[in-house]
Image (cartoon, rainbow, N blue to C red; front, side):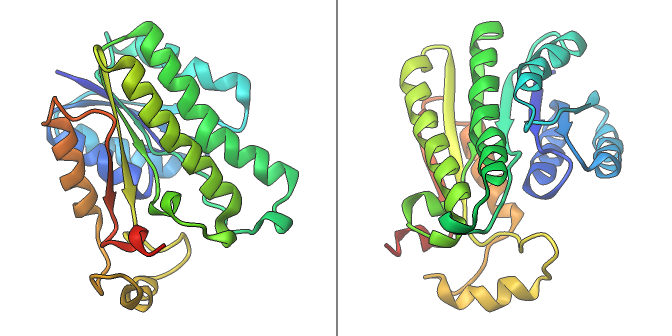
Amino acid sequence: MPTALVTGGAVRIGRSIALHLAERGYNVALHYWSSKESAEQTAEELRKFDIQCEIYCVDFTNFGSIPLLMDQVLVDFNSIDLLINSAANFIQKNIEKTSDLELLDTININLMAPFILMREFKNKVNKGLIINILDERILRRVSTFSAYSISKSALAHLTELSAVSWGETIRVNGIAPGLILPPSGSSHDYLIKKAPNIPTKTHGSTLDILRGLDYLLDSPFVNGEILFIDGGESKKR
């Protein structure tokens, strides 16, 4: 039975991915930070698929703790076949209003943690698939998401760089969602309000992300690609 490590797997897109992987027969190593109750609830749901699920609390803003996650997972599972970097710090601020701490935390969570986990995956496993969850904003210049967009753009470059370097043993791809979920604290009305700005005049759902995930899982010759699942929003440049 294959094993997937899903960061940020307790909530939002990460949670949907974790549940889908369990349904496909993956054991799941579920990373979380502040959402312990959600992680425990998600793990309970995952185990209903008769798979092994363990949860791991690691603060990605603490640089020194990041590489420990891979070691912890490899103690509990024989190996890891799939790494999903989904954890993210979604901060909506322009450059001049972003504090030093907000910048550092965003870079650590959105870029440094995936970089280190990918490096550890290469050095300690050296087979399988990595999928980085990005954002359609990597192709646009949205000033109100400065630190977030910069970190995700760098992660997109890392995705392509590592795919070229590691393709013989590890495929690396990305998924760049658009209008899929409302921001935390917002209702579904947010999606309805924003949908007219999308070329398709609709919003997506996590099901669209899971279709893209299945494509990457089932396509062994796809490497270094970023799937934009955004109704064409990223092309409005």
